[in-house]
Image (cartoon, rainbow, N blue to C red):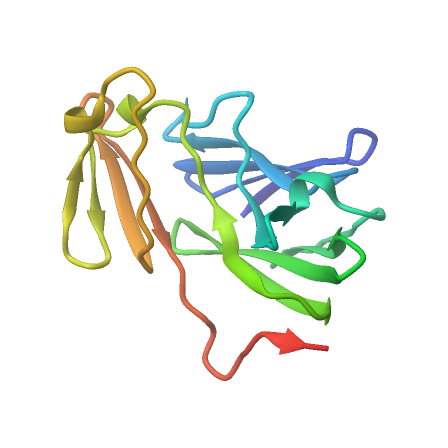
Length: 192
């Protein structure tokens, strides 16, 4: 994994050795992936960020507005961002993000601890939003289905799905992005 760390602006860019995938992470007053490049093509817009969080009691608590100043450790094998804190009076959430590379893939491990009590309506681990439905031609869902985005390509069209994996592809550029979410064996969410 190639790493470019801008300590002054609190940015880190991670890319696979072959350069087919690159992620830029902001870790200052928020902790988000604000740029994703697939085969050199930016697939997020400036207003889109990939972030984690929870929806609880009608409030979105997320890493787009972290409390505190996360710490970063850049090593040869991994980039770790710890002390990511967000929440409100009832519920505080703390996360650690660990990025590693394996076989031209960037692996993003999220460790989360809850402090306090609240009913969580939705868990965002992480939330990916693309600027246009036409960013991708289609997606193969982990459920076995296929989403053909041209069917939704109208003004203000949206499409949302919950699945453990999805492979997006763009027929024009020949690029694809696979996102797989799965818990590590033996790990669980800590509740305190």
